Image 1: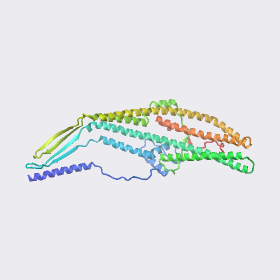
Image 2: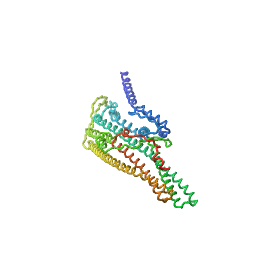
Image 3: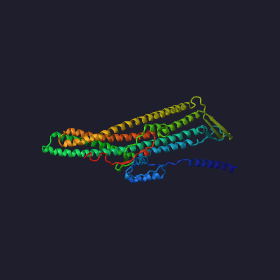
Image 4: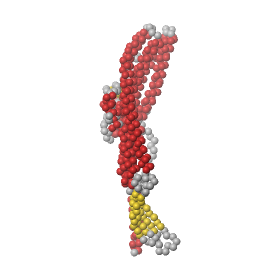
Length: 475
């Protein structure tokens, strides 16, 4: 009997040690991760090229050759923005959070262990220390488990689609900034040629004024024209500096990285018939609408979870105990929560109200999308009509400018009239470039609103350093 009394505590100790070891194996150890303070911006195009090749090797669905040396087209610009944008890199971390939430939703609830020890006091004759052990398990998390998994699975789909929509927006923004940057350089080239022309005239008129060959008003007109051109150049330099830095940040590049772009000659316009055809199914393609749909389905699962949770909370368990009279007992216990006052009615009301809110948000976004498409289609027609009128009358204006130049050289027209005519032609050329930029941005926005790819609708390529003025027009 002495051996049995000694062995029994040893078995208890061994069982407790094994239980502790088993519990510790499921724990995750803490590892510190210092905050990185280095920039994510790429310092050179060679490093960018390596990064893109590595991404393609990792399994992109479509591979597109990236060669920054010969100028980036719109597709290459969009790919670089998606793969290298710092903001998107941070947003992709949310996918890991959604995946962790889905993992957590699928985990089974842990059992509950209870223990107690009762020590007699006072007259303890014939008594021993009492103890009790219990093992319990909550049944309700098992009932709601599938609904919670469905909710988190739809939430993960929503996060992925929201990220995809952000990638689309970044691509559109990058292409729009690339077009804007290129056209601003074209405007800068036109203004620089105009400045050189007015500077040459002002130098000549200043010498002629000193020689007494012309009057002061002629020299003053030349100076006014020169200063006005400088003002336009100064404003455009500030604007282009902002565009250039926005674009490089969007592409994840350092500000000193040199970029060149090649653009199609003009955007391909989308007909209203084609747009109306795409509108019939665009809600099955646009990532933001699909994300809202997934969010609504996730909320449906949450409503179902709340409804299932209204049933009485049920826990079952077994107990093993020893009382103070040294009597051992084994029992079975059930714990039942009576839903008399709350019964999850508040949680159900909240989830149902949230579902109604998501329904209205989806309908609002859909209505906004339909309105945006109609607005962009009308704007496309308005800009196209303005471009047509400008292209019709601008050559006629240039022909008049050429004639006034000859008349001005022969002193048949005063300096102010000649300057107004020539300066008007320069302003209209700048307006022509502005209309081209507006049409490009409108076309890109329309593609994004309808969720249609624009790569196959792009016409022939034009280099970014192409001259915008016909040869000999600005001399």
